[in-house]
Length: 269
Image (cartoon, rainbow, N blue to C red; front, side, top):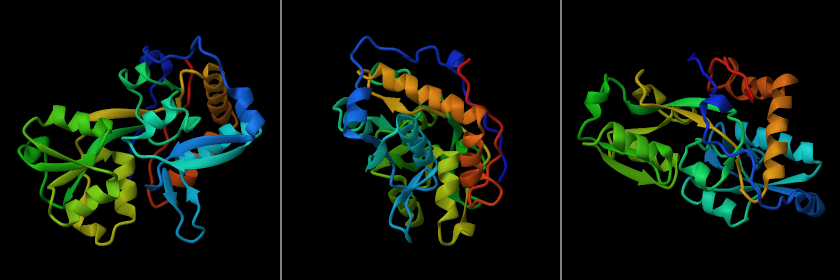
């Protein structure tokens, strides 16, 4: 599978808040010698449990580790869901969120976002041959996850559809396999990861059309503007020293199970 990813820049997202007047807690993170990061644990290849090592791995996790390295501290990974991740951050149960979180104006009122580090398009998984256009999904049951932008986008794009929201995408895909929903929807990169691990993957497909673009950002508590600066500087360094490209190739390159074409750069301009 080959596709073009165009990473949105800060200038394209003017509502992003890069600074806050509140006190920063970077020194506290260094004092405890641990950066606590909220990640997904069942969303290959962004965050999942490796069955052999029983450890959390993934694209988002590799980016989070680079931030911890920049701070010179250990990393603690805490599984989160789309529904509980922002409350966990605002209540200071995690220091960062690196969990396929789309940057939106509404979310930016609650938390700060880093520069975008990934962009996907929202698409669908359907039974092969059943869907050719968006019109084929009208009036159908469509699965997604609670608290996600996918949930809002599909309700807006197909008002006649009945949206069923699950705790995570594996549950939504199981509902599709069992015939409880007609399709599931989220970002194409996530859907491709789901299919790469599916049995009988030949029975399903991702139709070509999409309903939105989804730029991902690392979430930072508004109380921690200094931490946001460090995250952003880390992302720019990773782009300049090719570390970001290496991580992309590891998870989405031609030798991966979710091949995507890299055609973007992390930018502050």
